[in-house]
Image 1 (cartoon, one colour):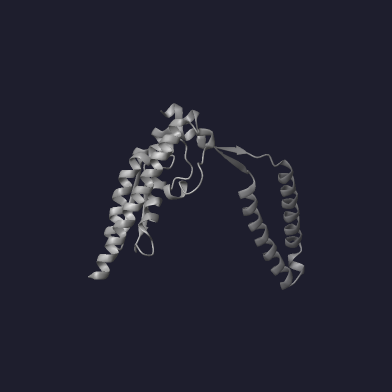
Image 2: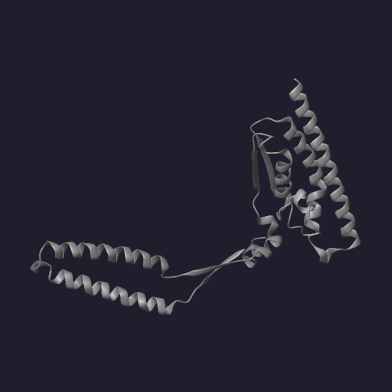
Length: 219
């Protein structure tokens, strides 16, 4: 595995040639040194203004050297995201946190879509963990997340199999089919099943939310 990691780096730093820039920096450095030498050699024959100018120019030269040192060897970083799939075993585990507080201000369906879109990212499923922090301790949000966890068993494989980019179900099914080049009978059948499941679960959650709200108003 170590040999594979070295053969397929996820990023690479490529030096950038800057001969003209280096030549101009060397010319500026020579002029700064010459200026400081001129000031220093005749410092005893001038007054306070000359000494103040020497101190200011010395500080400027020092800051310029620090700036030039940071830019002397520029590099260009090139990333290879397509190689991630070949190095899944080397990727670290990732914990994702979703916070919510009020089911009225933050509808449970929005939270559920956020969780489902995070679970369907292009990353090893066994190395992903999603945690939801509900400060309001809402039973509605808890019920919606239980339904989402069950729906994720079919939604996540569907997204990864057909390379779905819009991974929030409510957003994905609100428009046209995202991948027209995959309009095969199998894809259309699974797409229809997933859409029906999404609509039914959404309606069930909305009914539960309405019943809970009515119960709170009565009592």
